[in-house]
Image (cartoon, rainbow over all chains, first blue to last red; front, side, top):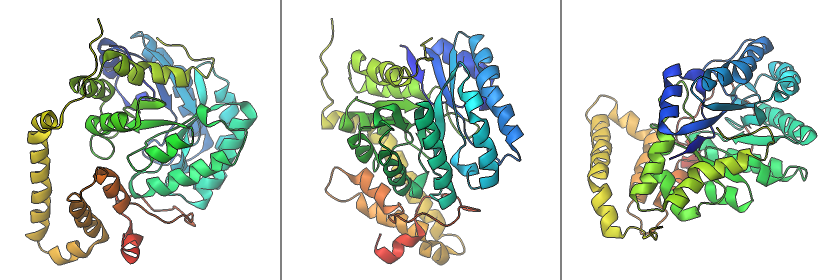
Length: 267
Length: 103
């Protein structure tokens, strides 16, 4: 089968993982800018990272016939530092102009603090000014419901932001309904220890339907699995769902969402 | 030719998932036993994360098809005011403020 992983952090993965993706049927990936596992010390560190996202990774992926796209933004974990945030936000347009940058992401909230909200407001305004797609990170664990509601209120209070051009990621059972009701796309993340399993993701497909859902691995430097998207597709298959529905969830849906950016092309 | 979709019947779901979920249940039982047999068990049992955990275990016995959502809510911050600062904070999986509101 063919699948797209719309959220995977290949900067943290080995080149061997690109081979695994390619031979398994994932020929298109999109990589949001995220927290590196440590706080960066200056805006120049972000310049290097955005260069890696827009130049190094597309070239590394191309060796295996994989198309690599990315999202540019300042993650919420480092947004607590307002001075650094101001400097990083100033350089975002330069990298958003790059040919494989699909929009602003992953931006959102981490602990739902006032500084995180301030920085998110500025990045939402940038999305309005540039008509960018948005990939939204929602907080982890106990902070998710509150953060998802704050983020949705912020977006919905800006009439120039169209929910159909926004994907709210890391949704779980207690947030999916509210996200979908408001017209947003939503992402489910398969993460072995702390987020969703393939079984729960397909439960969500069965409960909420196949519209506006994207499933991703978010594979990164922590315990994660770059092939989890395909394992989840297999879970859907073993429950007897037809190939058309599986193809819709794992290929057509991410293609539809990402294709709203004219730079996007499937591999 | 397209094969029409036939959702699994509940007994088939039981067949398919029973063994792996039996193992998960044993992991939870042994986690609670492990806390009980080590020094400081009373302190651990009074921790808000433990309290949210056992309330969640109790929620599994409810007659509803939304147990998963119920567990998520039992472990969630239900407030709406932003934090003044996130410095030094990280997610721990349950909400310390939950005890006061019967969460």
